[in-house]
Amino acid sequence: MARGTTYPKIPIVIAFATSNRSNAKTKVKVVCNRTIDDLINCNYIIPGIPAKSVIKEVGMGEIFVERYKKKYNIQ
Image 1: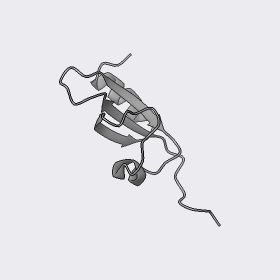
Image 2: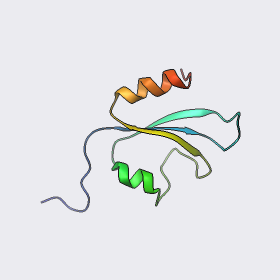
Image 3: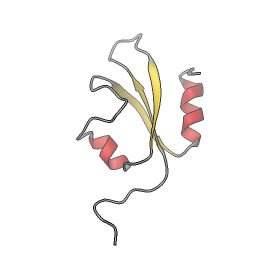
Image 4: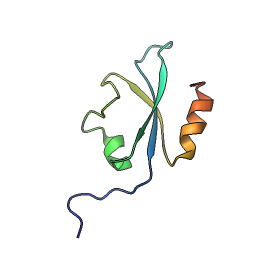
């Protein structure tokens, strides 16, 4: 029997802007050890994402890494 909450092994991809300014840099972060419900609720600070950042999109699966990089022109 699993302890606590179990999470799927599917990576969760988050596209976020570093601040609420229009010229803020957009970045992509991959989180593998949380559930998507935990990330959407934002009850805690996600490592690597500043507290003042604006989350633009969230997707589940490795395909979203390339989609978000292409959409936001990230190398």
